[in-house]
Image (tube, rainbow, N blue to C red; front, top):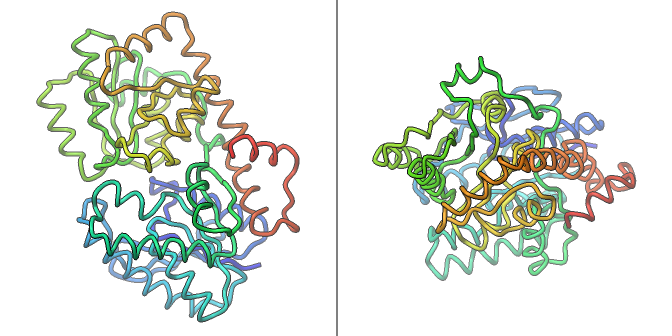
Length: 406
């Protein structure tokens, strides 16, 4: 079997960032599938690399998250044009496996089905156009209508669809009768593991040996990182012995640094974005992970990497919205809800967890949740079964895990 995997933002562990596609593509290769990955990079030339058996085609299409909406859309459309050319050059596959965002990657699938009679499987990581519309990036009613029509058409013409969360799947089912499978994001339980704090590592990063809450990941308008800074401010005012860490990059990073500077926070440390190893080391030095998004309904369906990394590392969770992830935390005793209008309340709740050592139970439960429902092996098994249920049957334990989160 041969699959062309299309992901505009494919990353490897060495590069950092979202590496779900790396693990899924590698899982396909390990299962005997020939995989060609089409992606983009910020260099001015085409490149081809063989990575863990994956043939990766890098297209010269620059992109920065900090760009304005129009410029980013231009990069999305340019990728579609260049990706079509590569698809035509590669020997014919059995399927295209296309992941969004952006939604425009679905145009490649529609084109391939119409022009080449190629079936495609479409993976939805975030709901588009709901997300940019709710954020306010798209206001024109005609454009909204066109994008919703495109979204529905992409789903309807797909052979199968993959959703990363129950909320995403439920939204998709209102627009199509195409079969939809939930394959959540991956908790990398072989790379991250619960570890004790090490004095040498604390010294290396200039951190104190005290209760530490970390935010790792994108720092943009939709991530509500200012709520984390507010929490650090209230902790400092209340003389709480807590330490706060931010590691990431994005369009509002400098604004957050300036905000923290104005508040004169001595308990908050910023670290530059790094590879996955840096994230692991900083998670090892932390006790709790902060997961946040702007308070919009569509963002409650998200399946962010930072949440699953934290589970794998055995960290308690502090989450700022009542989406499906909070329900998981609540059901499995993994974390707390952060009510941004009452930071002092959650600080008191965290103190209580520490004093009665319930925090240790939360951390243990986090790792258990990662292993039982969100391991890399389980995600790969679910995906392979979706691609070909006859060749890749699910065992009873995998099927059970599927049912629990659906």
